[in-house]
Image (cartoon, rainbow, N blue to C red; front, side, top):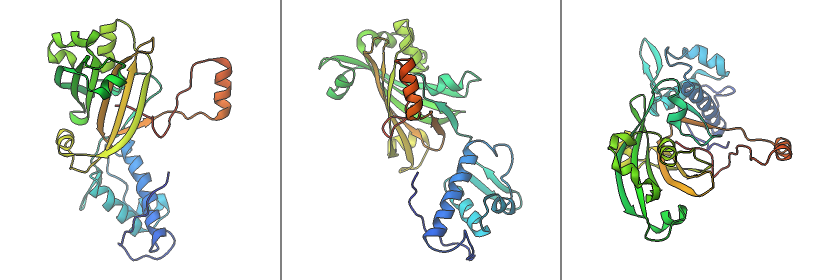
Length: 286
């Protein structure tokens, strides 16, 4: 991963790891990256971070570097420094979500207790715009069910989603109460079809929060968001849902295994099923 150089002008040490210029800013960057990763892994969820002396020994850098890093993390809302008490993590540990199977975050996390909740805020029948008709392979003018929802983690907003599904057969979802829609979209689809879903095509990007998404996710306008879009397909391959979501980028970690050529050759020889993939345009979903 490449990082843009950042210039920070704090402290006065000039030895290795603390010099001025691009070299120093890159040291601040990699230490900040490592400490942020440890924070999001939940290492200090229940206890204060180690003292400055312990951190500078841990990373082999100067005190001024550690102070710059902690200042950055505090500005990002990840830690709070309390005089006389220490430095404390403010954000919950990031959720780890594998992407090898067609399922969403709620299905993964809630197998061990309800931490993720989905609340449908809007449900309606609407004529499909041309873009949606193309994604769902519908004729122009066909109707779709539109579902807007908010996903929360431990009571705090995590992501918002706009989902589009063919009215045939999913108009039946509008006959029940809105509360009956407060479930994983994969579960809703499987309930209507009476069979599991097939493959999911995923794309990932990023954007800055606009006033509407910022209010829904309780972040500042301009906050970095993780954007995902997906097409969920039936077992026979035809599209069942197209959706777009915007998630807080500080709450999620998506992961898969990127296989080497030798592993793929062995897999191809034994099975026609593809291995999980991660590309710049298709990694994860919320």
